[in-house]
Image (tube, rainbow, N blue to C red; front, top):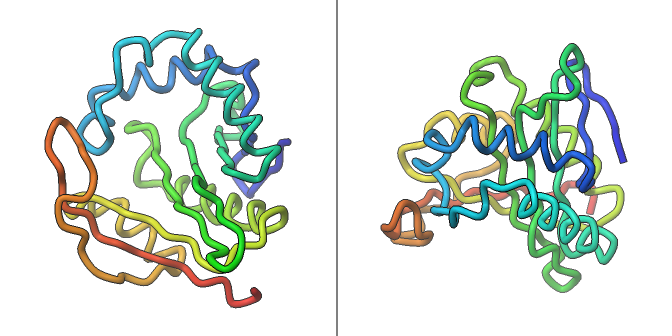
Length: 181
């Protein structure tokens, strides 16, 4: 599935763009390693990315998770960011965990906020979600600002919550409550 926002084209997982995705992760490897778990070397192969996209497609069909990839309209073949909704849970939780990342070269232009706003609208169309949760490292102020622009509320700090770069790091916890649930 593909949809558009004012400046972006947003697609759901499709194994046909594994090469594009590999390029994206390879170009941003050093930058992302500051904020994400350390991935095994095989992560940076087209075969691994193809298998991951196939698994994402299957999980979306089961409404277990949803992944979105976005590009600028003037360069639709180049992925500049990713969005994920994982652990989509049915009632009584009716919740999901939300994450995103953006190519280092495209930060500061509002692309991530625009894409996330569109992806939230789309995921709410197929999954009955009351609460969207997100965690962000305490020193990642750009990501904090994205969440705040999207209307997420700060809920506290999770101490040593996620393994990043070989160390368990503190994360701010944010949540958005669906007012139309």
